[in-house]
Image (cartoon, rainbow, N blue to C red; front, side, top):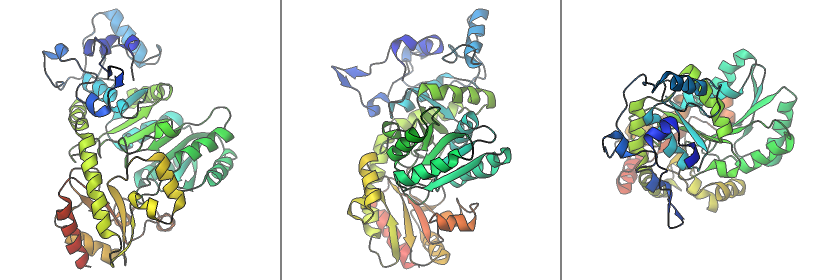
Length: 436
């Protein structure tokens, strides 16, 4: 978040006066700030909504200003560019979006990217050097595992992982072993894990990291796509960086692809320098669409969460269902460890869950093929309900043995509940179960 003293250059032209962040001592909520934070209509001909700035470059006020801006872009001057330079570096739509994205987790700074994977790749390239070691939770999104294990592996980068629900002692043991292999440059988490929906104890990870790395502590980054930013705020629990596929809940309409990273300014700054170099910034049109979507984020996620609770209640105990990996069932379930993490880390159960059917791939495919309202498609967090078979789709590239060890079995169906009528969804799932 920027304070009044930082409002210079490009930010000043876009927002010459500090935003109203509180009224009568009451701090305004994110849902309110999404309607205007970071944007002054007076600077855009009174337009209520920010225009889309479709330009590749920006005119400098004078040559000295151009030099000063490039000193920020190249890192010769701390704090980043003081003005608009070139659309690979910054732009009004992207800056407004980043201001608003950071609000949800009360983050010091934020960046947006052309996709969730470009956000993750830029982050990894920023902190990881050849020969380093990455410690991560498992499972991860398949493309993230591929990037760490296969792509970075070409440069001598090693990795060790611990299961998503690991205890502090188990996490510490893995970190200690990683130290013996080389410099641990990053701790990367995903919670809930994709696609099993198992939670990671971020507080335990932070405590283990702080115990073992008294100096030069590796940053903790976490993929917060499944629950964030409404139901989980990892920065409050010890994470340094929160990573998003903005394609999902933030975008929310299955019509854009984007990514984001929020967190401490000291860590965001080098990521920005890397983004400036490799050009992974989101484009102005996508940034504008995300500004539209953030205005209804809380409404959409709340409705989807309510629907998911009802749908999972229907699935629970059904004779053709082996189990339901829904976070809302943890309090009444037998997994005390996961229930404890949920109580400490989450404010809601989310709307994406894992459904284990009785049988295998044949039964999972029969169920998916029979759906009429829910769409057979990968992704999640949209207004429509989506269902897929991770073992045969999103995680097909993961080796068979690792998939089995991580609980990504052939009978697993991942479902993301949308904002349709809950009774209609239940009717659709009921008829699809009959098709097995």
